[in-house]
Image (tube, rainbow, N blue to C red; front, side, top):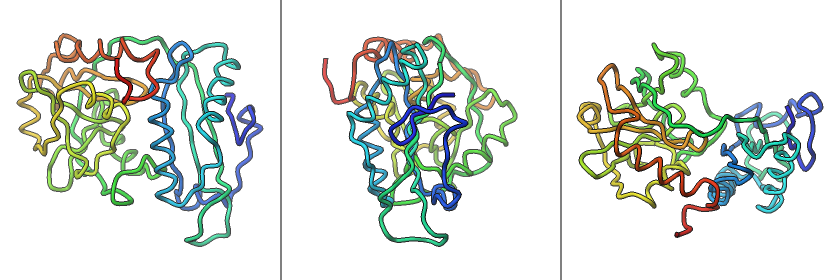
Length: 279
């Protein structure tokens, strides 16, 4: 695998990270995942904006500007010989003495991973409620951070490993998927859990809320099972139609709501830099 590491393209075996990196020792780090379509990094500016905000929230000084990170994306597209890639932009706190530190991290480790990804296609999967409740956020809101144990344990609880897991809060409210945000439809209106549940404010979630009439609503599991249609979103899979929830059948690919959402992506993935762009 080729990676961009602190300003240089390297093979993975040539990358060296300090054992004293506080991302490794204490999980102090954040990341963004996104993909390119024919070389275009969809909603790239939104991802960089969130990364900058996340770094600031945990005291990491991001040493690269937006244009430098975009140049890294373009360089990896050239190395891989394709413009259709999955990316993970990872910022780890950097090396420091062992012990919790309150001083800013001014020399973080920045890695940009890339791998080839298949062509776009419509997708449906089962949704399965996990027994483990969603953990509360690390700060006053959910960061896309290195703290992924809750997600990993939930993934191991799935009876169907091909399904997406559905997290509930400790009070039983719909929160989010293991790697996604959840949307459901009654009639022509879409709904999604509010961020007060501890859900991540996903970039694709924000995009759909700009494009569709979506209302944030607290909901219990029975309310979700009564929906006309369910889908989930993330930045690599776009939107995935839910074919069943805990065995209850839903429209999946045949849902007219999913098909309309799919068309929104058709018109945007090769051109939009931010959800705020109109037209």
